[in-house]
Structure formats: C-alpha cells, structure tokens
Image 1: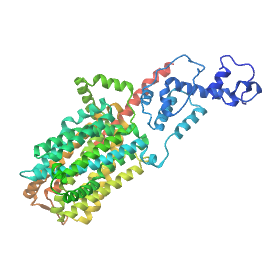
Image 2 (image 1 turned 30 degrees about the vertical axis):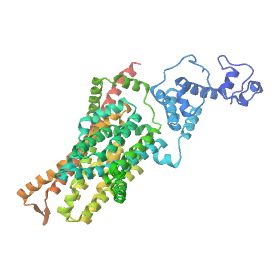
Image 3 (image 1 turned 90 degrees about the vertical axis):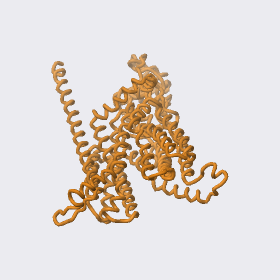
Amino acid sequence: MPRVAGPAEEPGSPSPGRTAERTGGGSRHRPGRRGQGRPLRPLRHRRRDQRLTAVRRHGRGAHAGAGLRIAGGPTGQGSGQESPRPPEVDRQAQLSPSASRWQAARLVSSVVDDDVPRSSAGLRLDEAFEAARPSGRLERIFGTRDFFRLWIAQVVSATGDWLGLVATISLAARLSEGSKGAAIALVLASRVAPGFFLGTAAGVIVDRFNRKRVMIGCDIGRAMVLVTLPFVDTLIGLVLASFLLELLTLMWQPAKEATVPNLVPREKLTAANSLNVTAAYGMFPVAAGVAALLAKAAEAMPDEGWVTTLRLNEEGLAFYVDALTFLVTALIIWRIAIPVRARHERMAAERGSLDLGGAIRELREGWRLVAANPIVRSVNVGLATAVMGAGIVFSLGALFVDEVIVGREADFNLVLFSLGVGMAAGVGSASMMQNRLNRSRGFVVALMSAGGVLFVAASVDRLSLMVPLVVMLGMMAGPSYVLGFTLLHENVANEIRGRVFSALLVLVRLCLLVALAAAPALSEVFGRLSDRWFDGDITVMGWEVLLPGVRLTMWLAAVIIIIAGALATWSLRSGARLRVGRELVDDSASVPDEASE
C-alpha cells in the first residue's frame, strides 16, 4: 500500500519545503497538496535522496563532469558531516570540460556503488549513467572520441616515422665513404642503442610529469631535429641526429601506451591495441608511396636557387614532410582531453621530481615489478622473443629466398606482403573474439604457435608452400602482440605503467638489435659448421634436406620463441597457484575469528 501523507508529520522527517526542494518542486510534492491524500511514497524518495546526498558529500566536482545536478539537503543520519573524497573523485574533478561524459558517469557510479546500498532508484540512476555512454558508430569502434583522436595522431606519426626511416637509410648510404652496409648498420644502431641505457629512465620521467605535455614536447622536439637533417653532410652528424630522435621517441611511446587505458573502456582495450598495431605497422606501404611521390617531385624541381638552398632533394623533402607530421600529431594530442592523475599522485611526483635517489628507487621498482609480477614477466619475455623472431625473418628473409628457394627479389616482397596480410588477419580475429577469449591463455598459445609455424616455414624449399605458412605466422604473431599489450594495460597500476612499458621497450629493442645485427653473423657461423660437419645437407628418410646457415638460424629463432612460450605458461601458472595459496591462507586465518564471534 502506498503511504498517504496527512497533516501531521513524523518526528525527524524533512519539512515540506525541503522535500519539495529535493524532489524538484513538482506539483505532486507542493505543500498545498499534502493534505489532499495524494500518494507521495516518501520512503522511496527518501532512499533516493539518501543515495544522491551521499554522492554529493563526496564532492560536486564528479557530478559536474557527469552532467548531473543534485540539490542540497541533509539526510536522516550524518547530515552535518563531510567525508573525505576518494582519489577517484579527485581524479575525475580534474578532467577538462571537454572530457567524455560517460567516463564521469562510470566514475560516479562506481563511487555510489561502493558507499550506498542498492535500491530501485539506484538502479535507475545506473541506467541513466549507462544511457550517457556514447553509442555512435565512432564510439562503437574506437570506444571514445578522444581515443579516436589519439589513433589518428598515431597514424600520422607512424607514416612520418616510416618515411623518415627510409630517408635516413638513403641519406646514410649517400654519405658513406666505404661500405654502405656498415654505414646503414651504424645509423640503425644509433636508433636502437639508447633504449638499452635510457629506456626505463624515460619511463620514470613519463610517470613523474604530465603525459600529455610529454607527448607534445617530444613531437615538437622531433620536428625540430628533422628540419636540420637536410643540412647534415657527415655520417657522424646523422648518427647524432638519429640518437636525439630516439631519445624523444623513448619518452613519447610509453606516455602514449600509458594513456590508452585512461581513454578506453576496459572491455575495449583489446580492440584499441589492435588499432594501435594497425596504425604502427600498417602505414609502411603508405609511407613507401609517399616517398615515391616525393622522389618524383624532387626530380621535377630545378637544381638551383631556393631549391638548392633549402636542400629540397629526395631526402630533404621526406624529412620536411616527416617534421610536418610530428607538428600535426602535437596539435591533435593538444586537443585530446586526457584525464589528469589523482592529486596525491601528482603531488608525490612533484616532490620527487628533483630527487635523483627517488628516480633510481622508482627505476628499481619498475624492474622488480617486471620480475615479480607473473603476467608482466611472461608478457615481456614473450613479446621480446617474438619481436626477435620477426627481426630474424626480416633480416634473413631475402637471404633465405636466394639460398634455399632460389627466387627473385620479387619473391621476397611477396613473403613480406604475406606476413603483413597474416598479421592483419590475426589482429582482426583477436579484436572480434576479445569478449570470448581468455587473454592469458590466448597469448601463450599464439606465441608457441608462431614458433612452431616459423620452424615449419624454415623447413620448406618451395615458395608455394612458404607463402601460406608465412601468412599463418602473421596470424599467430599479431594476436600475441595485441593480447600481450592488453594484459599489461589491465594488470599494471596507472602510476607505474610508464616504467613497465619502458622496460618492455628496452627488451624489445635488445632483441630487435640482436636479430638485425647478430642474425647475419650467426648465419655465417652456422653455415661454416654445417659445411664442416654435414657437408651442407643431410638425408632423412630418403629426403635430402639442405642445411645452410640461414635455415639453421631461423630454426634457432623458432626454438627460442617456443621456449619463451613455455616459460610464459609456467610463469602464469605459478602466479595462479600463488594467488590460490594466498586465498586459502586468508580463509583459514579468518575461520578462528568467525568461531570466536
């Protein structure tokens, strides 16, 4: 039966004026109608008012971000007390006015769910929050408009990166006085080597400062360095410029990776990482096309006057366009509403920004986390070895085609195209099955499968067999990369996420350098050993199997990837057993307390 309000009021109940204020002043709640016997259901409204007032006590800033307007007024209990606001509300209160409404709604809903009992009015409030979530086609694909802007920035930046890399290799070959291969290797080493010494330190910087400002500053700095490259006439100058570019990239990339989980819902992280992979590696054909167009434009320009002054040759035009892409990226990132970290995190970073000892302690903390956390450890080892295998395929692929398959250069291009198609298919399948896929298990399965497929692909000697196997290799390598980054996003705290990704990038660069530099040398050594011990081939069940050094090196890479997958599986299982053991200990410790009660 609905309650009927009479002329008398219950002790402690809110006054008619305050009731009208809290309920919005509708005609059903005007003081003049209280004596007419209309059903007011004050108990239901009181529960809703208690829920909303509890949210108001946590801070009005969160509701300003969520687009809610809550009238003031005390509740039945604790009306004069102010409870401290949790860090999540502080973080949301620092959002810029252009922050997405559904992010604020989700945060307010989580605060309400933690502090106020559930009720029918509360469920309707949750439904209102869910209704505030974006539902357009753009949001369904990218999660939020802010992440869409960040993805566009990555597309533009990746195109410039590939274009600049092609121009850098061309300039290194032109400036070399002796061996072109040695000059190119030296320049590429200058792009990889800084990650070994300063990669994790860059992660500390990313965690201490505003990540949005770090990305903008790095983009502007890279544009300034690129503008000077057309005027570099020595190989040493090119090496130094490449070194500076890599330093800025070391800070930009972890800042971007650590920002993604703050812009994308948790259930969209796998799709977001798939889009990131597409933006990073899918722009190489576009950059190659742009480089060809710039080369044609440079040939059409007269070699005199301001063209010569500005060095508008093939490499110069590429460097200028690359610098322009970084400026456009900085402008796009400047327009993104990136949530500011909690106040206590920001104050701690400001207090320790000039403390070298604190930076070293945080650096050690990041490495300890990589070693102690089973998920972080398995992902870092798995991704690093997978990148090493891909680097070996890239560095030895042309040699394998020449020595084993005896094909043309176009055949190797077909192999690279097949690898790209397979990676695109694998990334797409991981995105479509993200809600039904066990990420930890899928990561190790994809990793070990990639190693097995690479071993089989290195065992064939026909292009018609190798191409589909390379497609399968890409289909396994793509999901392992996407799922690995998703696991890191989901299992690493925001305040140390930059250091974790920097540690990962250090390992990736190390393995990539080993693959690019050491793989040809290993192939030469294995080739000599094969000629000495097996005369270059063996017979297995009537089949003659050639054993050139390039095949033995690719087999070694496949075995390393399989072993890394097995280690990742063991690490994840040991972490699961440790968590179960801790839960059992906690449960057994709580039994005597319950019995004593």
